[in-house]
Image (cartoon, rainbow over all chains, first blue to last red; front, side):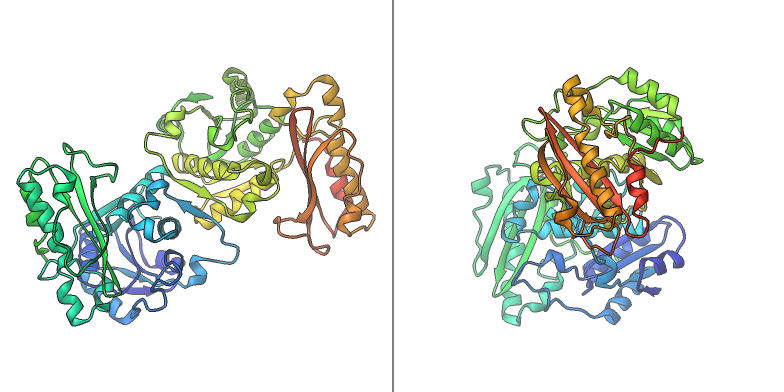
Length: 283
Length: 283
């Protein structure tokens, strides 16, 4: 695997249609599963490693966000990446850069309600990364469900001709979704964090038992979680419709650490949703 | 020349790297000159003909904007277009379309100050048209100078890899820049409209004589013009610098018709700027 500092170095190193896995580094098994999925294709796999300043708000954890390029390189290589691209801030935001890409009203809801500007920052950097990489396919984790839906929308709206693929969430033994921010949790907080997947599991169990009323579905224990939202929506994040595939989404804090998660709910085969919560990836 | 209704029909009709000339129809000799410039390349020339609703504000002339596809087709074909693409509103803005592309603070200045949202509408539709056409090159008139600068910036910021080329302004016998909106002028208003190019010519003459003070440069007769702005800026529309290439820009109304124009000022060869105002295109 090659470590490239510039987009030009990436293109000099690879040939053929790129599958692209954009990350903010701090790679864990969740990212590794995205790279393994990418490596199932025939073209080269490029993983980017860039902590994007514009998607962090004032008082958020941009400075504290974990950075370790050597560790990231080891994980990316083991998972099958051909190139790890670690661009400079100057390559991504050259002097005079002024454009923003706004995914529209959905960017202000859910996580966007508590993180103003976050999804505009995400969409802008991803569309620029897409421009620099010109991939045929890009892979994102379903853990960041709203991000995935918004990036699929922006990519379609701008007719970029790139397949934006969502990959399954990878979880710890107790169901906690893997996240670079989990390392902020103290051992005590880490134990309490199981409340997040447990809440989703309870909603899914209720759904599997035929419950379709949102208020009843969402009446689950939240214990130590400082809840930001727990909601059920249609799979495209439009308003919930009991007869269509749905998704339950949660966000909240344990101590100072913000955690998010979600689980898809299928009205045809509802039991599978609960099972999926603890499915292990087939490595 | 083929008239295509959908992007798929365009791609079925042409092969090789596309040179793209986006228009809102109502084609005149100015547009014809853009198409002729495009046809000097080796690839196919695609002209789009789409009156974009999102770049018109409330009370502007979206409904009244002239539309005549047959006349446009005749002009585009005579100028050397291979395809005239006249998409439906549904193709450009399908259900669920929600993304906007914002060129940044410059979009709020000059014409953007009196037309809130205009350049966001322009940038969004052009980036989508670029996505659907995937051209290697796109040609816009320098008459819409701020639009050209903003589209060059957005295209660069999003790393689209498309050359955005500005083509010289084509003018009537008295120097009035050709514009689809000139047909709104009554004969009396049309005669008065010469004040716009005359103001630019006076600024250029003063500049050619060595004047570099903005206030003195811009002290020119404006007669019947209801002035919106007359200003001098650096060529990239950053603040004026007497030692760098500059541009004088004007906007105002004659009767109800909004007219804009501009003229580039070169500190090295200032005399050429004034001459260019009345240069005829070499057909």
